[in-house]
Length: 518
Image (cartoon, rainbow, N blue to C red):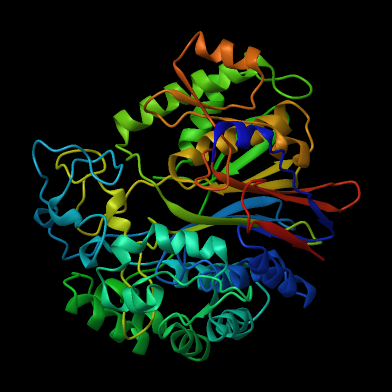
């Protein structure tokens, strides 16, 4: 796409409005979640329904072989929680498996030193113990109202139908084709006849059967979530994993339990921000706002001073993060969605396979696409985030809910690896500090400060703002386009406490992203 052509385009997207809503990176997934609300479920029921279904709609992003975090606002309790179902390295993992290749540049755009055979990036050795299923079961049991069978039914139906491959699906499959081709079941599923499926001249998207995923989801629906960790599904998982060389054992699965923890919480211009804790991006976002101080407080779209404050704060916060936590600069394929119900309960949920198609391994007996959670570790020994058995790695997830005067105000998050924190920081700043409505905020150009290299600025940002940033730091002008999304893929739902109505907004340039309201 040429620069001149891209500059002539003005893409807009309308918000969704209702008493409750789901906004996701896949509009059909949002409609599935909204169906749970329409059937009397609360925000957590809808979130779990969406989370279990979306893996059959965008399997390169997430699924039951993945991990994630969920931020929850419970209206009756007037408080927030976080459900942590992040990855854990196998207890029998041997760090020597990930021997560093000396004298070579980082591979696959990673900040880590390259590893022999890219074992931390792709294949069976890159897989961490997955938490998706237990995370959703834990959230549903603690906060939901519907049964496990109810929330699983849409996932089964979608998997039986198969993945609909329009132009965007073909683009994503083609992007991951080189690695998918290395693994038999992945190759057979996504590259029939050696090529990605494409829409025919009749305009009807082909449907791809996702291996044995539908059978697995039926078993999961009927046998319950712990079957994934202790039953028939677990045995099939471990058999396939071990056959491919993974050290993950039945004990690793049986001992995996998601945890409900307190969020990182901080005050901001009359609002309270509740975000994910521990080895996530939540503490980095909090630090960013501490560094910003009151320099972004004002009215209307942020001016040059506000953007300079954000740029400098993000630059410093990431420098601290890289020095003390050892985060990697990694491309990621993650999904984020938000849910708000009529009672004011809120969910911000980010789940991921990590890279595009995760490990690129689809397990043959189950059809599960597995994560590559080991890539979040530093393969160099003796560092804060070094790979080790039984350890949790650092990640970029930043699922967040914001309250005001004791009521849930909005829920927000994004996919996009290191680009998540800059996007969420600016969108919170625009609403909390500058008083903008959510639809306006999402249509304004943003910057990206990801810790290394020049500050990336949307070339639609006003020239005076670009000059002000460039006077302090090197900048690079980049377009905001469909692929890749240079400024993350955020979404948000905001609730009006006076009327109880909600407004949901998704990333303007994301072609599948959208919302559904009830």
